[in-house]
Amino acid sequence: MRILIIGSEGYIGKNLYLAHKNNGDDVFLLSSQNKTGIDHDLGIFISDVDIPVNTDIVYFLSQSPFYRDVPEKFSHLLSVNCVSALQAAEASRKSGVKTFIYASTGNVYEDSYFPLSEKSPTRSDNFYASSKIIAEDTLNLYRPYFNIVCTRIFGVYGPAQKDKLIPTLIHRVRSNSSISID
Image (tube, rainbow, N blue to C red; front, side, top):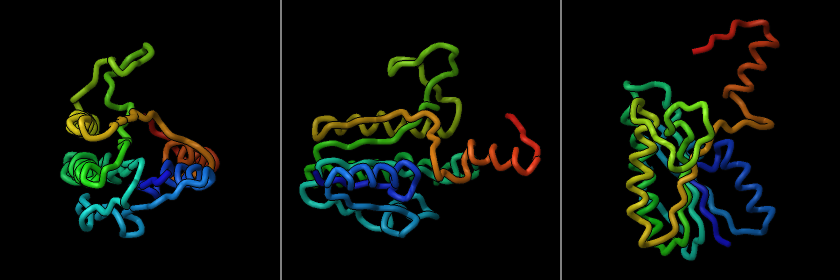
């Protein structure tokens, strides 16, 4: 299979790349970190999205690093989560991609003490969740052209992860630093 991973330098992207490579797939990578994907400052693609011919799956994993800096950085958040995702979807349509997988978030759901399903109520009371719901809804308009999968991912943690909740907590405990809970 031919695979394109947009957001390939993130935690999920790196592990997904390894899984596909180990499976013998032909994998192409785009990332803001190596200046081949989304512009770090603007949140939109550096140039036209280049989808290799006969690509089977496009993964859109890119996330704005400013998801906590809203409303000040909302334009960046919206650019990455919505505009860039739609740019990639349109390029996928033009290239005849079979499946487009969008990494959304479990944060789109309203708070609940009960198990959630895709039909559970969603929220629009914060910038991050709203931007993801806007992207999901708009990407669904591409269903006549290819398979759309919007994955609502909940808290990803694992080995070698840096600067996120679990590694930060471990560091604070080991260094005897204070821990604040929102």
